[in-house]
Length: 298
Ligand SMILES: NC(=O)c1ccc[n+]([C@@H]2O[C@H](COP(=O)([O-])OP(=O)(O)OC[C@H]3O[C@@H](n4cnc5c(N)ncnc54)[C@H](OP(=O)(O)O)[C@@H]3O)[C@@H](O)[C@H]2O)c1
Image 1 (cartoon, protein in one colour):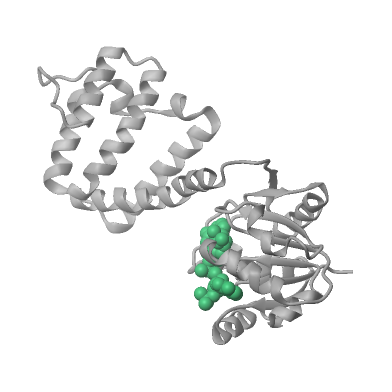
Image 2: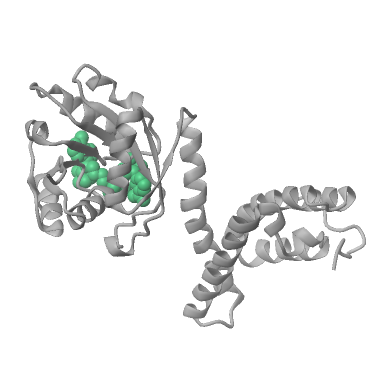
């Protein structure tokens, strides 16, 4: 029999998952939302299911909580407040929370789990453009078996995760995903200030550089993949970058200093001589340029 699934939170992740569940042959009972019109719109976009009440969750085998991180505990309390026998699995999609967020439902007899998709779900992108990618799972042995089955329907690669510092885990995910998006925007903006390029060429250049850099780091590790003036210990070029950013694109200075300081640390671990490394750090901290105006590298 097809899995009966209800989704709490008709937003980006809830709607996208609903579409994948339907494509995989599951029975989508519908959505619980807090705004009737927006919930109805999600039902319309997916093309099946209904606007559900909290009480209707009793019928679901799987209840997916896809509400914002700050709204999750409230949503669990609302779902748990409805009486009646329960079975099945309640899972959430939050990166911020572990399983303790289900505390208000502890006595209901349902199983708990989390399935955090490691993919960005932007509002403007339709589900067929959301990459599968990994999903990080938490739960006991029986919940994990169900979560793996859901991953297969959602076309996610399951990664099982034990106890962890969840806020720190989520901070790392935000750095990798949202940080990369922010960096893309900043690099494209600085490139536009340099002039001489058509807009679409600038976007394509940033995309190509970032894709190649991430691909190399994924294959070889961050240190071995590092290239560029910091890796070469070229203090004069780093000074010139900072001087020009300060005068022409000051919004890029803080990010340049922070990211190149991390790059300098990686370069030191990869064998950049300690004296060159120290000079780079001084320049990046704003404590002076190369003493003789020359670089430490090529
Ligand atoms: N977006 C991503 O890229 C992404 C990726 C991985 C994981 N996640 C996680 O997935 C979760 C959902 O994220 P999202 O981006 O889909 O958020 P979203 O687009 O803001 O959607 C959240 C939905 O939950 C509804 N909602 C809020 N409180 C509710 C309540 N008490 N009862 C019922 N519905 C409620 C909201 O309704 P309104 O219409 O009233 O706002 C909205 O429809 C978050 O925990 C997030 O960390 C997101």
